[in-house]
Length: 160
Image (cartoon, one colour):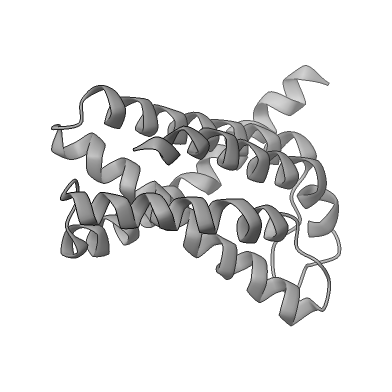
């Protein structure tokens, strides 16, 4: 439980790395990803970060609540997967550093792996439940991203 406190820091630094450099990177990564504008991306990554915080705080506040527990642990797993697909995969495929890879490898993957291991060993979540909560949270996030980009584009246009 001690390392749980590092999750908000790790995801914030990861998403900050992406928010700063990924929109520019996406302009040169057309074979791998649709180019994304700064405003729409920063809006989307901010909402996803807030969702991660919410899952974290609710899992801490209500540890016996099945939904919050699985949502948080699913987030942990999704962020590990996110390090490798798309960040590592696109870095290899494009032969160009993908923003988010360093923070994913140095922060998210080790911290989240330790938290997940501790949670399984303590009985907070079972491996079978983790194995379905990660894809469930992943599908939820993948489904939300286009909507968040669209909303972010709309807000960016109104601000300009």
